[in-house]
Image (cartoon, rainbow, N blue to C red; front, side, top):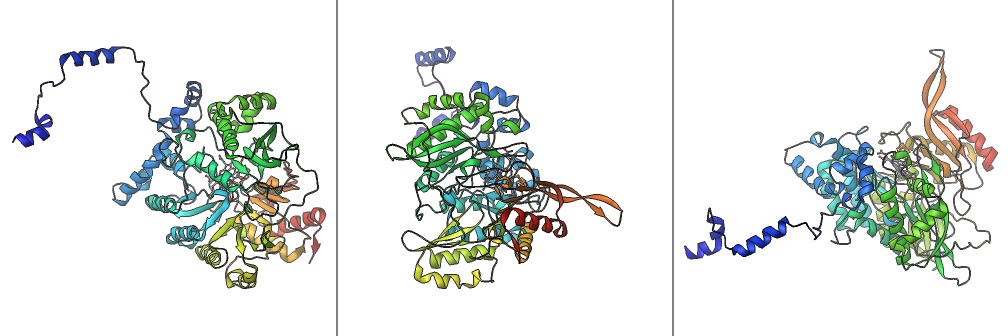
Length: 590
Ligand code: SRM
Ligand code: SF4
């Protein structure tokens, strides 16, 4: 009895007499009554980082701001597991999940509900840092989507050098997330108001013209977003309540494969004019959207190419963006609008005053080497500085079937020590292929008809890019990937072009397919066509055509459509494309 009482006595006694001396009790009471001078640590959430003024604007903001405030987005990291467990236990279905959770907050776990096109299934947007994937990860993607069948269970390479998996159900989410984490990859904080995949140089480390190896930079930036510095856990609450999406990329050479001109922050490598020290000119505010497409602006700012300096620029910019970005109008909530609110000169001053940049050496923008530079191609076979080969493989419109994903993994294991690289043109590459093994690689059945993968796809098919389109995207006005693949093949039968013809497709004006950057950009939209049966012009799916976008050092965004309302049928579109290819890109009939 005594032993038992010593252990459980205080719990067992119904009315335990106070054991603390009365004097101490009174002291505690006084302390509680006194005005609080000690700050009680708040639970660290996305919202807890917002200053009072930002919080007020968020409270009066869009419905999405209210969703983020009603329940902090950091809750999604545990909600996913709880919902999945309950669904598996038969206690609820996905339809029972609160709308704001399933369609918005779960995006903080990288799971994007395909509510309109495939209700109950999710697209998973990964973080493929610098576009580098291992064969093991590629096999994991294939295994993850396989159960959902060939129509829905596909692996897409995206225009951010990234991967999206399709078909997953909510109850399968935790196993996918845990599996990814076990392979040192994540998908958290990739959708909605988050910082997207860190795009880098697909040739990092194997580049004869490399100025900066982008891999440490993209890794550092990825950690900044996805790791909580205080706890070491996944998900940094500091960036869990941004006003809108945010894009960062790091270029490693003059080719600018990462597209610094259309990212919110773009690091452009450039040596210091007097010392020769390698650094970055940093450009800001580039973006594309339904209402506005803006090229990045220079703030006349150069930093040394150190992780500390690049991190400081990102932290300072994100702090301003998070706290000062628009919360009332999502069309004005991108970084460029904050820059314009201040004006470029004042924004630069503000940025440099940020605590994160204290002690960081910032100089005026350095002038890039003026010698003419020719942008290099990524598709096909190219020799690396060490004599080995990089082999760029075309993945038509970035879509990989389960079998194709496994083929790439097998090829990587056999020829490139298990390494695969992705490009923003939605293609793949095998680096470090031994010259002696090249012939065997090029003779592999997977690259010669056994799958859609090809090393020599020609100047049209190999350079066709396409956004997701209406098959899975609820915002799409037209189907894109299938049209893009077919039109590229048909054009290739009709014409020859002397150099790559970059045709980009995008299903709506959000321009995920970056049509303004393309030689020829096709943006889904309304069109009319004469219908002989009714004798009237009828509404049909169509495209607006953009011509003359450029990428690389000489980047140019083609903002105004060349032609609008072209029906999306081969008999209408093909002649238009042939004519444009002949007039502007030196095409000749085959
Ligand atoms: Fe995008 C929204 C797909 C790159 C601008 N984008 C969407 C959503 C999430 C809409 C939705 O919920 O369905 C699309 C998902 C469809 C799906 O099922 O795949 C979607 N965007 C894509 C991807 C997959 C296109 C592709 O096939 O490659 C790209 C994924 C990149 C990644 O890995 O993270 C993708 N989106 C882009 C880019 C290009 C880029 O980043 O270089 C842009 C223009 C650049 C930019 O953001 O400034 C882009 N996506 C948008 C926008 C317009 C943003 C804005 O400020 O208004 C939306 C709409 C939105 O966010 O409200 C959007
Ligand atoms: Fe969807 Fe439009 Fe983006 Fe294409 S451009 S993926 S249709 S949002």
